[in-house]
Image (tube, rainbow, N blue to C red; front, side, top):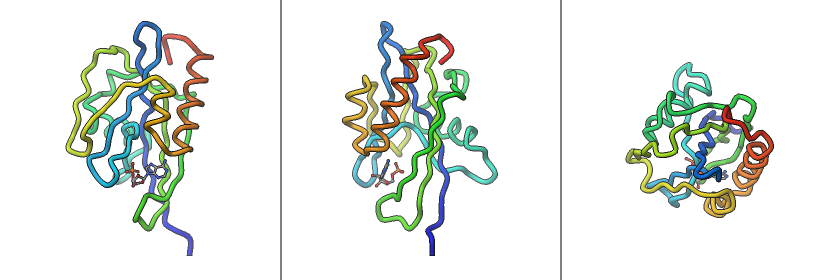
Length: 149
Ligand code: AMP
C-alpha cells in the first residue's frame, strides 16, 4: 500500500545586506538538529500559502507585512521524514524580508538560526534536494534582480 502524503509549506526567506543575498535557516531543537527554512504542516482547511505564513510567524516571528512573497518562485520538495510512516511534501516560495534588520524570534521548535550566503546555506541544509532548491532560488534571484522579489 502506498504511503500517506502529508502536505507542508514554507518560505525560502532571504534578505539583502549590501546587495548580497542571505538565506534564513532554522535549526530544529528535536531529532538530529537539522537546519531548514521555516515551514510546517497544513492545518484544517488551510491553503499552503496560509500555512507558510502562519508557520513563519510561529517559528521565526516574521509576519506577512515583513515579507514580499514571490509567486513566481515556487518549488515542491518531497521526502520521507526519519522514523515516520508518511511522505511529506513541502511547498516553498521565495520571500524577501523587506527590512533586513527584522529580528528573528524563535519558538521552542528551534534552537538557533543563521543568515547565510547560498554556499553556506547549502552546506548546512545537508539534504541534496534542499541544496538544489537553494541553487535554483539563488539563480532565479540573481537573474530577476529587482526590488519585488
Ligand atoms: P522536518 O520535515 O524538517 O520536520 O524533519 C523531519 C525529519 O525529516 C527529520 O528527521 C529531518 O532530518 C528529515 N528531513 C528534513 N528535511 C529533509 C529532506 N529535505 N530530505 C530528507 N529528510 C529530511
